[in-house]
Every structure is written in C-alpha cells, then in structure tokens.
Length: 263
Image (tube, rainbow, N blue to C red):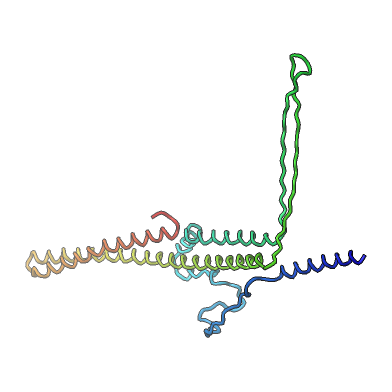
C-alpha cells in the first residue's frame, strides 16, 4: 500500500515539475526602452481625443480641390506594387503566427486508406474462370504533444506576434508614403500642364508681337534692332515648350508606376 501511494506521489510530483518547467521562458522579457524625449501634449490640427480616427483613416487628400485625387488614391491602394507587397507580408505574418500558436497545442493526425483488390479463381469449373473482389479500409490516428520545457514555443509565439505588428505598421507606413507621393505627382502634373498652357500662350503672343514689329519695320517706323529682339524673345518662348512637355511625360510616367500601371 505504501509503495502504491509512493508511486502516485512520484507521478504527481513529476507532472508538477513538467508543468512548472513549461512556464519557464528562456531569456529576459521585453522591456520598453526608456527614451528621454519630451513629447508635447498636443499638436497643431491634431484630431480630438476620443474621436477614434487614426491618421491613416483621415481623408487628408480631400483638402485639395481636385476631383480626380480620390480616383488616384483608390487606384494606388488597389494596384500599387509596394502596397500589395507589404499587404502580402502581413498575410504571411498572420499565417506564421497561427502556425507557431498551433504548435503549443496537441497535434492529431488522421489517415484514411481504401483499397480494392480483385483475384482470379481458376480450376473450379473447366473452361470457366471467376474472380473475387476484396475491399480493404484502413483508418489510423496519431496524436503528439511537445512539452514547452524551456519556453521555446512561448518565445516563438511572442516573436511571431511582434513580427505581425511590425508588418502591419510597415503596411500603414508604405501606404501613407505612396499615397502622399501619388498626390504630389498628381498635383505636380496639373501644375506642369498649366505651365505648358502659359508657355504656349506666351509664344503665341510673341508671334503676334513679332508680326506687328515686322509690319512697322517694313514701313520704316521701327528699327531692325527691335525686330531682332522680338525674334529672340520668340525663340526663347518656343524653346521652353519642349522642356515642359518632357517634364510632363516624366511626371505622368512616374504617376503611372505609382498607380500600378505600365508607363
């Protein structure tokens, strides 16, 4: 009787030892670094407390009176390759977290197999042959569980959770950066088109001025020097037009890449 009680006590103490070991984690716990930086209590144009609106949820591009900006932002969010790559990293981190978290629980494996075998039977009746069919079904199950004696699985779970947070923050950063760049290039493209219109109008006015000066020169009211000055001004105005057009092409190409289109 004493031996039986002693065996039960040993079994209980062994189970408690394994349970206590499973609570032990290798290495120190994470501690937030103490950064001596004075942060202001509020910022200019900051959202009100308790509004529940995060910076990425603010429709900041609507502050610009451009109806096409919303369409550009939608295209960037749906097609931009950098954003899609960052989003896939979040999906991978989520899958990795589910996998590492599942390792802390028992694994159960089920395997099923079915087989049909046909065997000929010869010699029962002369000139005739028969066959027999045998169906075999097999179902097996196996279970396994890893005791986290030194906290390896727990640390892996924490690392996977931290990696998921990093991937999510990286996605927000990439999305905000690409959206800001797309808005900048879109507004720049509009400004360049306006500059092209002004340059073309300026060249047109210089042509009219040159024509008027040449008419006055033909009747002797204007010296030749004024004609040469007018031609020089017209040449400078016309030379600026190709430069603006080239800048428009480069900006449009960059914007196409940001929205996930081929240039």
